[in-house]
Length: 295
Ligand SMILES: [Fe+2]
Ligand SMILES: [Fe+2]
Image (cartoon, rainbow, N blue to C red; front, side):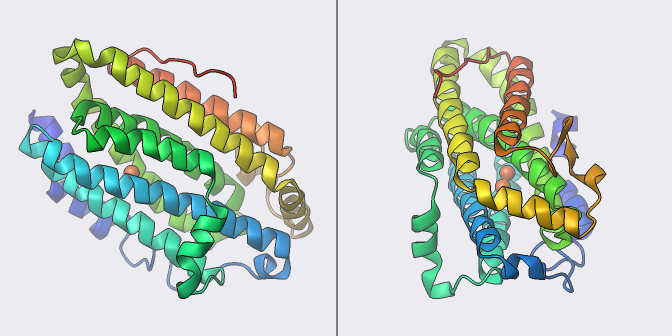
């Protein structure tokens, strides 16, 4: 347990996160960085940015509810302390993405109605599957659902968004890079802590695998809706990026050039990448990935 202890201690968290990669940032980016003008010049792009950010707030609110709920369910104190750091990370993610909505012009009084208006119903269903496990007090399912499935998804989504924003929106790209570093730590905890618990409780496997299957189904439906919605905005974003001489190399992600890819191609590379990660991570903790039914 000693390596586990030091890698996931509050001391390590303090040194690497608030005193490390977040030092000098304001809401996750350099204080001088702003959203780029081009977003405010195009209604389609602005709406797409708001819509996307709403999903990030929703996902992070779910992670906040899940990680805080897991603290009291955890069977050991090292896990409780790690989950306390994770709870603060998730609260920070909720805050920085909410702040981004304000930066994009959403009024504070309109926050909840904007979230309701743009919420992807499949993402809401995805979160419900996980939060139901927490309501039942199921620590093992909760950690797999949160630290492997939800955060495995978030990790790849953030990475893809980071690749497509590096050139034109360094403010958002920097906000994302801090969350990517956080999610990497959360996913690592899930893998390290839960493998032994699954081994000790093999009877839990079918139920946990069913949850993963249900969450994967809702996740793929979330992607499908997200990429079929704003097709005009994707084309507009790519046109503006090309016009402004954005470096196409920076938007290369898992072999797909996001500055020229169609929304279908983007959806395919994201779904492939996330599912591949799920298979690897679930395999490491002794679970077998279950393919969801076709959407
Ligand atoms: Fe998060
Ligand atoms: Fe996380």
